Image (cartoon, rainbow over all chains, first blue to last red; front, side, top):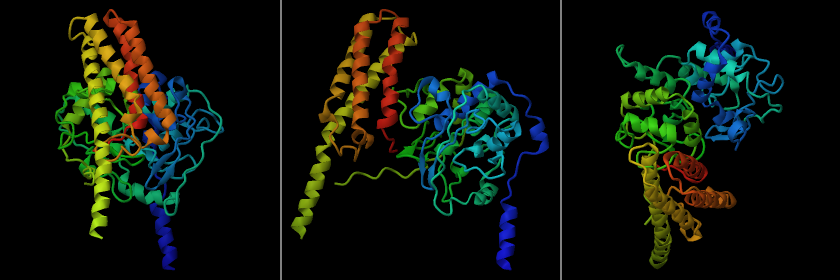
Amino acid sequence: MLGGIGAAVFWLLTEPKRLDEATLASLGAGDATRGERIFWAGGCTSCHARPGAEGDARLELAGGMKLTTPFGTFVPPNISPDPNDGIGGWSDADFANAMMRGVAPDGSHLYPSFPYTSYARMDPTDVADLNAFMKTLPAVAGRAPGHELAFPFNVRRGLGLWKLLYLSDGPVIALPADAPGKVALGRYLVEGPGHCGECHTPRDLVGGMQKGRWLAGAVAAEGDGIVPNITSGEGGIEGWSEGDIAAYLETGFTPEFDSVGGSMVEVQRNMAKLRPEDREAIAAYLKAIPAHPNGYPPRTPPPG
Amino acid sequence: MRKLVFAISALALGASASFAEPIADRVALMKANGAAMGALSAYVKGEKPYDAADVLAQLTKLSADAQKNADPALWPAGSNTGESTASPKIWEDAAGFQAAVDKFKADTASAVAAAPADVDALKVQMGVVGSNCASCHEAFRVKKG
């Protein structure tokens, strides 16, 4: 009897929450030219292109790249406009619900390895523009393999509980009403489509971002090593000017001409395609956010 | 027992110490690469008047470093422990690493041969040479904090 009530409560709590009618009505037809900027800001190719793809092949969003995390291996799907194996059969509302609420067309929850916890903060117009641009990309046949997850992470419904804790569309960092437009644009790009926090913020035991240590750096959620602290705290970017940050995003070179590496290379390639004012806005935001010490443990000294 | 512990410690210390030199050498080499890139970038950005002779000297330095980088003595197996950001993939994907090393040699050598005479010519060469940094680091370097 109690088990039955428990199951009913679980079922109710984990119901998919889609976008409301007003938001869906505000989507509009979308502009593919504007959408291309959102595409690069959102970093879609970094996960959804075929592994090792270069140049124009990066626009074939076949999926298949393996993201190895402590929760299991996630495989991004085919999100090309193919009607059978991609998202060609999705409505505009389906696309927006996936991006901003992590809900698939059949009502199932998407795993937050797809960073809808950041995309939730996007303007519906930008989402519609992105959708319009993605419809212009090549249709790719063939589905990617499914995720490789062990119990309990393979229980999709459980994500409904996780979302209650971790899915919100409010800003992470409060800005004063008179904050410069550059900083506000930077906040939008970083906290929304750029989804920088998903790698650069430490996570707790159930994989939620620790917003109290926003962008303080983290043990890499997938792959090896650490992701650096991009606040002005100890170990971070205090010594970098806004110009240094914007130049790094454009060229991949630090002020000392060390080079971008690891997973950030893909990100920097995308950042290089944005407008200069976008990179400057990101830089202004990063210099404005609260400083934190490194969000990853210090390097252990070598033996001897 | 104590002799055994001492012997093992000495071996371990010796093992980690034996990588100290190649690690230091390749870090110095990479820093020299960065310095050359910085000097060339100043010309590309128009921060100083174009000096074809200095540009050629910087490109020649990069090319010489790319040759040194190809020395296997710089990359002994196991030297990714300790104070090194080398990724284990250097040895797990030895063919891929060798390809990256060879590409850097080839691209810098052809930049020297091109001997760019003005900023526009230099930009072309920098595009090719500069892309080697990120593409090698993408696969073969790990940030450790």
